[in-house]
Length: 283
Image 1 (cartoon, rainbow, N blue to C red):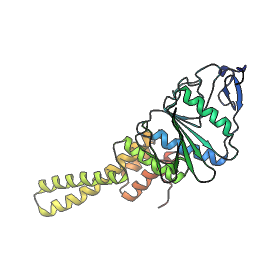
Image 2: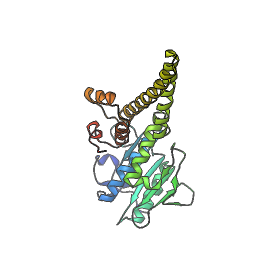
Image 3: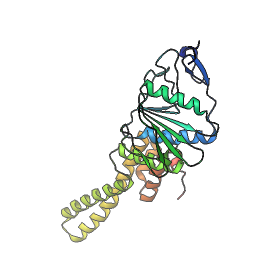
Image 4: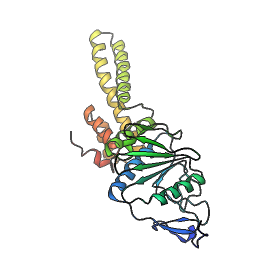
């Protein structure tokens, strides 16, 4: 074992391409294109899980002066403040692609587990896609394509593909955002809208006291209830993602009476970079 090195976490600044192990500097080059895409979509899925209160990319964790490790993704225990985190995340994710230093990776895994991380997922991007699951004092478990990852710190199991495939990640992200607002999935949004519409229709029918009025009320109520639910869900997703709509954009949402357009905007809102982008999607 090497003697302690001279470097300390305080010597490094955010963005420096180094980690520290026992005072020795470890060069960490930039992420490749494929790994960068996977980092982004995988982080989105994990950050939006209903049980996750914080997550981050390349967050430096330093529990001792000569130690500084930065998992590709940290889930949990990520403070909203400057400087290195002093607490290991319950879940850490590493992406391994071409040229991966396997010895260095195993050393990093061991140090993160020793620091208190409960689960480490190593997503293999070369060859057949798989995830290696590491836990302290347990044998490595391998999850292959089609399987689900479900540690206890998440509310929803994660399909393996959602950690690297953009479409799968968007689908999982939308599910998470709807769950955060009390909906099971997009079908649940539609079902609740129809139920609200039926109730409004029944009430209108009773007040008018005519069969024709009841039928028309039910039909109009169903449609209006569905529209109200879609508009409310769209606003909720925008709020959950920190996307701030202008007054004119909110008016456009409130005045839209086409369920297909509202559904399309709702799906797009789960991954759009701005509110204006949701209105540019084609039918």
